[in-house]
Length: 317
Image 1 (cartoon, helix red, strand yellow):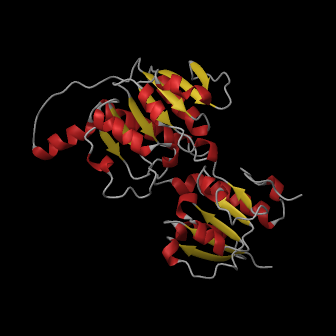
Image 2 (cartoon, helix red, strand yellow):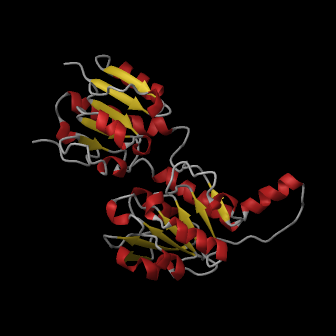
Image 3 (cartoon, helix red, strand yellow):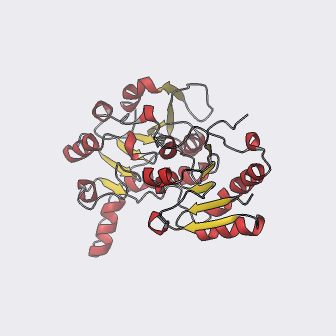
C-alpha cells in the first residue's frame, strides 16, 4: 500500500525533498499554508506540520490520517481538536529546542535590560544619548515550565550569574535552579522575579494561568517574557499592567491571536518588545528536526510504531 504524506509548512518543499530522497515509495504532497490545500484530504495517511499552522477545519478534512508528526515540541493544537480520532498517532519534535529557546530568552531579556526600543528610536532620529543599562547579573529570573527549553534557559541564566527559580507541576531538585516551586505557588514566585519567563505549552491546565493576580504580584521594576504560548496569558490584564506601569515592561514572542492584530495596543506600548513568534524559527531548523522525522518514518513504515520517538499518544498494541 502506498502511503500518502502531507507536509504543511512554509518550508514544506525542503522537508518533502528530504523524505522523497530517503523514501521514494511515499506519495508526497506539500503546501506552504492552508490556502494551498485541496478541499479533499481524505487520502492523506500522514501529516507533517507545526501545530500552529493547522486549524480544526484541516484536521476535520484529514478524515483518514493515521499519524501526525509535529515539527514543534508542542502538540496542544492537535490535542484540542474535537474531530481528531483517538487512534491517531502523534509524535513531537521534543528535545531540539533547548539551544533555540535559551538564546531567544537571553535576547529578549537583553533587549529589555538595554532598552533596545529606545536605542533604535535614537538611531533612526540620529540622537546620541548615553543611558545606563541594567545588568542581569544577580537579578532573579523565575522560569515557569521546566521542560527541555526551560532547563536550557535556566542553565544559561545561571551562567550569567542570575538567581534562577523554577516553577513546575513536578518540583524536584534541578542543578541550575536555586529553588524549584510548584505551579500552585506561581503568584508567590512572581513576586520574587525581576524577570518572569513563561515557557509553558498551551495545555488545557495552563490556559490563562498568567492571570491578573500573577501580574499584580510582580514588582513594579519587573519584566514579563512570553516565549511559551499566548493562550496561557490573560492578555487584557497584561496590557493594563503595562499601561499603568505596575510592571516595568514585557518582551512577547507569542500572543492570544496569531498574527498579532494591527489594532492591538501592544504594538504601541513603549515598554514592550514584540517578535513575531520566532523563538524556534532558526535558519538551521531542518537540520535539527529531520533526524526525528526520518527515524519515525522508518518505524512507521516498518510497523514499529511503539518505537517511534517522542510518542505523545500511545501506539496501538
